[in-house]
Length: 340
Image (tube, rainbow, N blue to C red; front, side, top):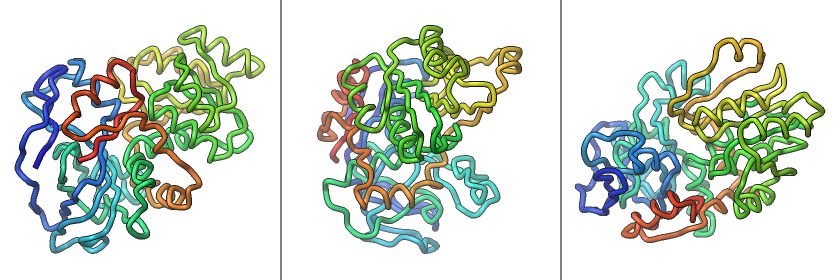
């Protein structure tokens, strides 16, 4: 099969790889209908996150089950499925508590490289969710978004304790931040402040439900959030970048007693203990337990209540994956969808 390989910084190639097969009785193999490039893929692409030799890329996927192991019961060949980037058994105490991304037997689905024609998914019964039938082609981008960026934005909103009638600020205008705006709107927030400097992303944030745009970053952005909220700060802040600046901007934008949901993959983030102590805010975040939210998100997508697939503003064949990476790296695209 064809699959995307990162050979080194900014060196993306589509190469022939062995077709995946059933390795464990709990595995499934799916034929990808669509895959995509994630903002977190840019960390190794840029050389910020080191890699050890050539690495298969991609962890977001939607497609049709081709084969299952003998112990798989919940999905069958022919089902159209979406799954999380973290495989989970669904039965351990951590999964039962709703934190499937930290399952006692967690496996990273991306290790198999989802930017490809086929993918082996471990722990299929606890990881994959089937749609109600074969989806219309127009729904596939949104279903693909549910496998990571929508589920991650949704977790950010839940972790930030978004509630009806409250004010939410979103730090980050990538796909996750934009879909956190959508999630906040769906969860009933009254005021949603999107922090963005880019006109195309501002427009999408407004379409997803943002009520206000703040263009300043850092201390300037914090000051504007405080000014807009009577000096208090937001009830809920969603951090969707993963840098020191974005994390501190999120914490400082929250009011005392407020909640910060942080879902940007952290790189070099160090929290000052004394400031955090006196901030008196709740912090919850990490790799999103997407599997917790998938059944609800799929229902919302199938009923066309939400259209998260709008974050894909560039669609390319799999063979042009390198251009998809370049476009996102240069901020010419929010998110690239790849067609195998």
